[in-house]
Image (tube, rainbow, N blue to C red):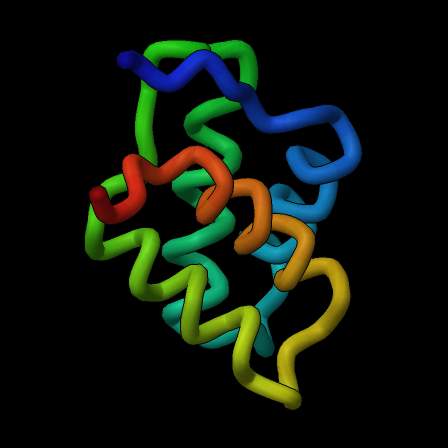
Length: 82
């Protein structure tokens, strides 16, 4: 079954700000880029590489709430394991 989820407005704003930040790490930017690319795109899906980055962002205690919001959105739109 195809993905029908999209990135919401709050998560898209968080992703945009994450991408613009100069102090944001690579994993955060990868997850944010994935989330932002899925705004208004219900058939797009997070790649396994971006899902791994998003997972790392969510488990890292040093990550900002903004980055975690974007990562959570990206991870929720991944295929997941069966």
